[in-house]
Length: 501
Image 1 (tube, rainbow, N blue to C red):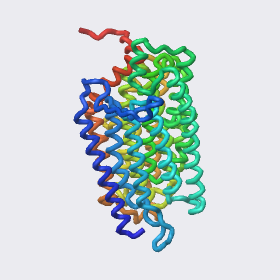
Image 2: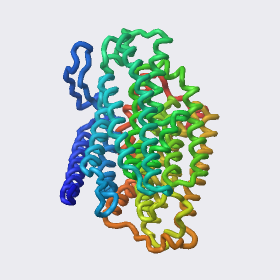
Image 3: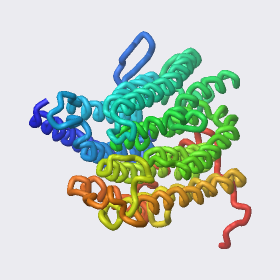
């Protein structure tokens, strides 16, 4: 492909992503947190024979995640500006630049529709369809930094892409059975109608039926999230992807799983959700500690960030199933903050890896002396992943722990060890890559360029702003969280000691 056409494809992708961001901001401005549960709705009959509709609507949780998705995609496009360039100068081995950016935009569209869908079948279609462009992004546009050469890298990319696809397809097929079962029981696919019928008692499900349907939905969402022990596809996928695609996986795609737990599992199956809570909390706790422990021992920068994300998703799922308003508000806020902090850390790590050509931590040292801006932003992003007070994830993690402790104190106490481990893997990563003597291989490493600063700086600013002032997000999500608490017929535990008047 001629250079001019590649450049035009890049600029077109950036313009489209910015236009989508403008539309997301419009939705954010028009959304009234104190208004109806689902706003900006539209519905068109799609498959009349089965009662399937193209039905969209947003609540506060969906609005926050749509804004996050639309915000991150322009940065992903900018960060991946050269990821689809020819592999070698003058080589005939081209990478289809147009395809790379088209796949990213396709994923964005499918994720946003998943957040908006109020028809269960429509949600399922896009929940599964997003796997196809992600498969090609992982397998066809993988990371070029591989210590065993291009042939081994191609094999590893293919393995990671197939593993990603198979895990998620199995989850999706189980969910499809549950979607069909829900239709047999309810007679339609409308989320709002089914939820309303459940709330007013006109739709009755046998206890066993509700539990089986819940498990079908939850399994698919737990794979996507991912929750231990269904997580093993994530480290491979993130390791073999380019940094922007890795951000697309963990900061965008995975949020669909945790969002769907709130929208579908709790809203449609409140009794089964409470029945499964003890086991889910135990699995979330294992995810927190297991992910953090494995992150401590990683030699690969990307795998370390992947295992850290598994730990963070454990906190999110724990907050959702703590069944308290603080826990669910914290979990929703955590989805937003984790997306920003992980995007910042992974993209900066990607810039670092592209300079050195290696993902191995041992190949770095003394970077802060030759690239101080890169090292400084890497430190801030790293500190945000360990939830340092003053940075965005601290507020959400604190809310999750408080919300969990009020109803499940033992789980909350044990989960705090995840914070200690997070400090360990983050600071050890920074120490081994950025401090110490300057290794010869990094002595000529350039600092962040203008394009890279344009990617990193806004994310760092957001981490600080939301760490100091999270109110804009909590004001949007809190009413939706209260409605979700009402769906499962839960109220917050009363404090053992009343506040002094």
